[in-house]
Image 1: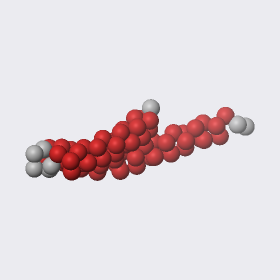
Image 2 (image 1 turned 90 degrees about the vertical axis):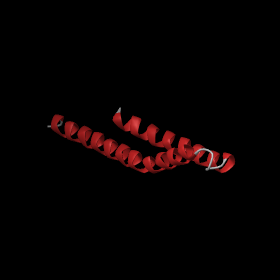
Image 3 (image 1 turned 135 degrees about the horizontal axis):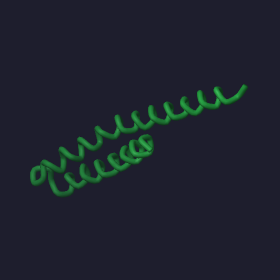
Image 4 (image 1 turned 45 degrees about the vertical axis):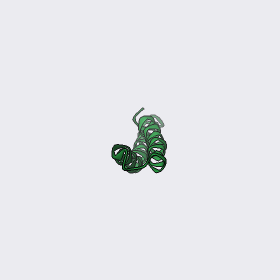
Length: 73
């Protein structure tokens, strides 16, 4: 569940950050400096979220492998 949230959060963060950053090019960064900052923050947040999702997936896979080894004689 945590891996899913991080993965989809990372993808959503990248998409929303790109849209907000692109909108500052159209509207102008001087009119809405908050949009530019928020877009940049979301784009930067994408990488840690995807790394955390990968870590959670590896952790879940490792947990499944150790359980299957214990059950087999």
